Amino acid sequence: MKTKTYDLIIVGGGVIGLMGAYFAAKKGKQVLLLEAEASIRHASVRNFGSIIPSGQAMGFFRNLGERSLDWYRLFSENYGLPIDQSGTYFTAQSPSEFQLLEEKHAQDKAAGFQSQLLSSKQLTKDQPNIQAQTLGGLYYPNEMSLDSQTFLAGFLDVLSHSSHASCRFNQQVVSLESGNPHYIVTTHTQETYQAEQVLCCTGHFIPDFIRPMVEKEPVSVCKLQMLRTKPLPMRIKGNLLSGLSARRYAGFSQCPSFYKQAKTYEQAELDKHGIHLLFKQHSTGEITLGDSHTYYAIDGTESLDFHMDVEINQMMLNYANKVVDIACDEIGKLWLGWYLEHDKGLLAKSQNEGLHVITAISGKGMTIGPALMEKTIDKIFDSAFLEFDL
Ligand SMILES: Cc1cc2nc3c(=O)[nH]c(=O)nc-3n(C[C@H](O)[C@H](O)[C@H](O)COP(=O)(O)OP(=O)(O)OC[C@H]3O[C@@H](n4cnc5c(N)ncnc54)[C@H](O)[C@@H]3O)c2cc1C
Image 1 (cartoon, rainbow, N blue to C red):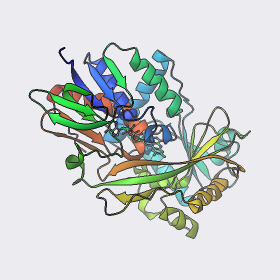
Image 2: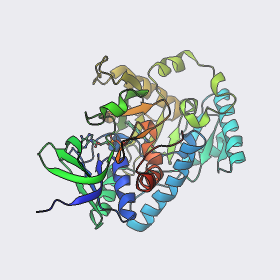
Image 3: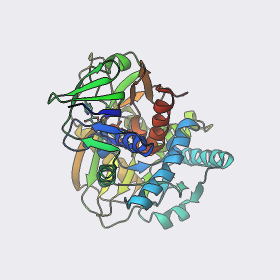
């Protein structure tokens, strides 16, 4: 029997792979997605599900984030996938952080992006549990959040109804050969598939068949700690971020006072672990909060530490109580997440015609995923070559 040849095989079924499959199918291509796990279980479902274009560097990444907001709205309207459109609130716990928010507001205004500077009184109206000493906030009404697990499960279901896309789980790709004229992909169960092009979206995993494309790049692995409280009666609206987040996000880096922010002893300690604080409350009342960032080399010289650091959790909880008035000592869940980070914010490249890698999207994969993969799919089908001017 003749083996079916796909237009595209996608390796990896996180948000990046799934979005890739969607846009390839939308283009009328026959696409096969192969995922190693039995379900979606890595970075794409360990995150906050916060879609925050304002946190991205102005230009390429911000624009992708803004375009992704349109895609998420469309997915929600067309397929009934749940999204929470209550926006993003950056808050300021010190005068210099408030200055940063003012500068960012002016920058957004000049660039035509919508944001609202809020006095402490205005902020308290929307966020009644914010600590009284908070100096104000910057509100992005168009931004959103979603429950990644629910959203991506629904998105997978949408793909399963497409006559152009097929997604197979429990299929770890172990080798990839450039046969003539097609790529032959073999999985751990010795099944083989063939395609004209292969797109690897393997997150922080670096399988041998893409290692030569990744290992010489300025890439590191980041480990993040997250926690979720038990259900709480208070309400946090949308994405709520502390002043530490504004100090950390690339979207604020062009503000004049970004590099001049003084640090208290406590902030310097939090900085050592890359801690900033984002809060997201679920419809069931639990609050997800995090996160911390610890970096490791990918070359195997440092072994990847898999421990959860109790002190980091305690530091996050202590700071959380300075931002919002919550007794979030009752922790329901703790977990780790990993992603790859590239000095330029993304690794997107091709080796030969038809073999592509897209990874190292760091902490913005949910935010830019749809628009990034719309562009990626256009590029690989228009030129069989993947490269962005970053
Ligand atoms: C704790 C945390 C919080 C975050 N918060 C946010 C946020 O609020 N907003 C935001 O925009 N971003 C956030 N991010 C970042 C975002 O989650 C990632 O950028 C995004 O999920 C990356 O998606 P991915 O598809 O590249 O990777 P992954 O989700 O890791 O998916 C890669 C998939 O490839 C599969 N795979 C690997 N090797 C093979 C193989 N050989 N064969 C088959 N399959 C394979 C893996 O099993 C995995 O399922 C956060 C990340 C973390 C860890």
